[in-house]
Amino acid sequence: MIKVGIVGGTGYTGVELLRIFATHPEARVQAVTSRKEDGMPVAEMYPSLRGRVDVAFSSPDKARLTDCDVVFFATPHGVAMAQAPELVAAGVKVIDLAADFRMQDVAAFEKWYKLPHSCTDLLKEAAYGLPELNREAIRKARVVGNPGCYPTTMQLGYAPLLKAGVIDASHLIADCKSGVSGAGRKAELSLLFSEASDNFKAYGVSGHRHSPETIERLSHLTSDKVGLLFTPHLVPMIRGMHSTLYARLTKEIDNAALQALFEDAYKDEPFVDVLPFGAHPETRTTRASNMLRLAVHRPGDGDTVVVLVVQDNLVKGASGQAVQCMNLMFGLDETTGLQQVPVLP
Image (cartoon, rainbow, N blue to C red; front, side, top):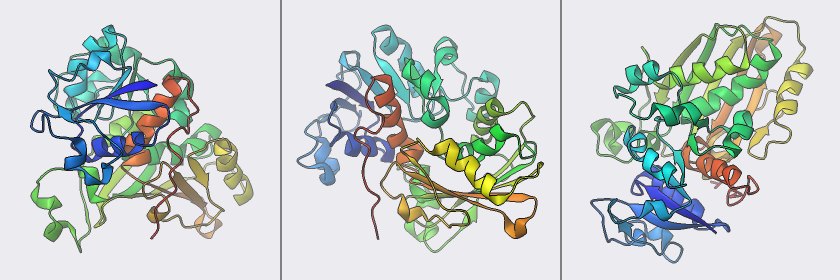
């Protein structure tokens, strides 16, 4: 049985990890940290976990994280890199859901996250946690940087096209929308019900920190220079993400062959569902599941390809993907504990 520690168990990604591990047959949560809630049973804060999770929150100094086999950091940026060296030295594997181990470009990290990187040695060996594109590195890793939610949709949407060399990599456009839970569990004016409900807005238009992460990873898929125009939006729903990706075709390719690029790329992937050509995936078809669905379009049979991608931002976009990585790191079937069917309506 894998002994699991969770640092930062009171946020949305933390409770999503707890929900997943409540039914995971090969892992047991041994410690969940929270300074403020030290001693409080997890199920008292989250009644949905009553009868499923019997641990209490503990302050970091009491948690004995070095006794765990793997520790997940569901924390703000900067926390994991401060604690990872001690854990790794004790033989504990680390999976960070924040950005500390996502980007190999330290200067770019420090520019976008306004933090000095204090753990560059471990960063060099960290594996980027997108299994569909980096599975073998994850299997062997001691440290995994879980991808951002938006970058997951963009990479899986663009990957087959970039690998085939059929699009102009320098002019990619990503128009993406996320539910409010993507901003985290915090008291902030723009996230209040009266502010976010019945409203729709873009943000980060002049630059968003998921852009350099996505560009760095997409650059591994092509020898061409990658240029990405990425605009995120906040939509009035709790969870869910929809990315509309645009690219210009540079080679002659018919629609059947275009569809085949995606079907061939993901035919063996348990958590990527390629819909029929021209379909319209909906966010609710992935809610509370680790599934990502996508569909390919070619308006007017012209030189523009459009890829529609949906996922649950808290599951495949965060905690579910992290557990998927853990399964790989410990030699389990990748789907273990992640077979939840999406919730409808």
